[in-house]
Image 1: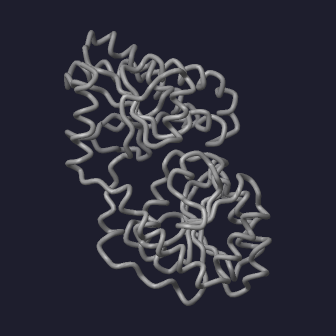
Image 2: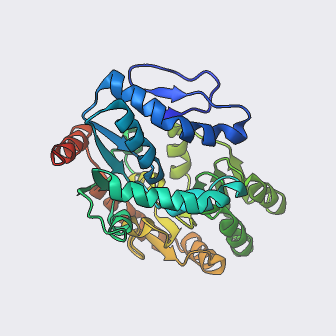
Image 3: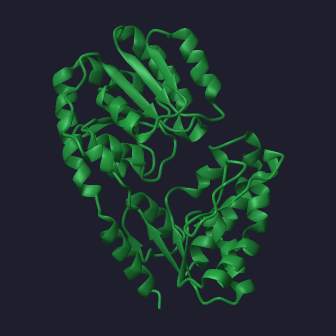
Length: 336
């Protein structure tokens, strides 16, 4: 696996080859993508794989160039996890937005020139079909839910609470959640909102902590065991995103029997069924989100019905490592 790394001294073993960051960090992303064809060519010569799985549509052209440089016959499979339009527009610094047209162009070329495209659900499949390409397979990525499944579902907590987990970036709608919580908190004075994550929009959380210190908590990060505990101590997960692929945190929430109050963004609608395992509101509608949060927090019977539905939904998306590996093998074999 080839990827960029955050740590200054990343591991380099038989499974992972993590590229050290470039200083200054502002140039790190550009440097990684410019060097990607050379790095891919080296990996293809050394490893001689049958296929290369690429998780970013905009990276496929660089991988295709690397394949040509290495004179390799490896198949290039685009493993599409989300909407490429969001990567430059709703994530990171504002400078990334200037590169959005180029990212869009590269992604379109990647979707059309890859030897095959694997999608996760209806949402990503529709994105590919809009480019005139039919995916060779559609199935979710393998996720190890071990810690989230090893204990029975905990009862909903006595104190009503909400949990948000995600990077603090535009695409996660953290500003919408902050506005919604300012509207909702006075109506549920004993409830709290717990936020987990880091990102460029940290100031939004900091302002919320000042405005509502008794009803808001922030964790920079949690390990899996800690996340399981916080889900168990929450009434519901809240996900106000502007864009999503197939959000892992929703499935983790379902595994713990916790409903999800979310915006109708991307692949969220493939997971959350309004009134069955969660509540859906329109994207960027802070007032509707506030009302939905208040309803879940103030109506225990309603929250419990949604929680039962959430627990039942988890099994629809579970797969063993062997099942996932077989699906990937069949996908690659179908490209011969």
